Image 1 (cartoon, rainbow, N blue to C red):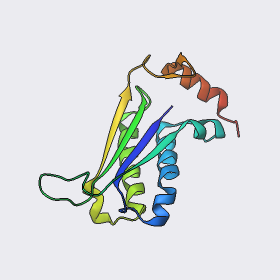
Image 2 (cartoon, one colour):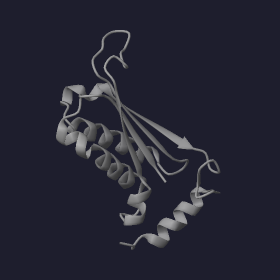
Image 3 (tube, one colour):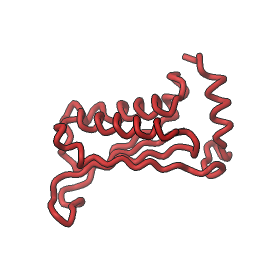
Image 4 (cartoon, rainbow, N blue to C red):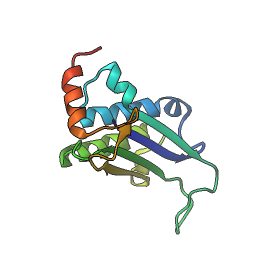
Length: 142
């Protein structure tokens, strides 16, 4: 089950974008992961927005805002093509939340692959093969 987290300086996203960016990022992640578009899988895609207070993020050069998208997925869930597509679409989604195309280089996407056997839910270890089987079973659920 995927997790996506956007860390951004407070006040840098537009009001409308701030209201929708979490769901939009979760949808992007599910699409590139190849998960079925069902209520069950949408409920499993956790999306966080972490807003940093002023001055909490700078570089050695300047204090222009930076945006970090961190994605955690089971190892094997994303091919190289899917990682590239996810990176591109996550960047576009963050930009659409109130930034300009010139801000693209200030949006970084880090994809963390969780090794098989190290992801747990409901008190049990969840293996990637279990998720694939579950997706096949629930592909047509509403």
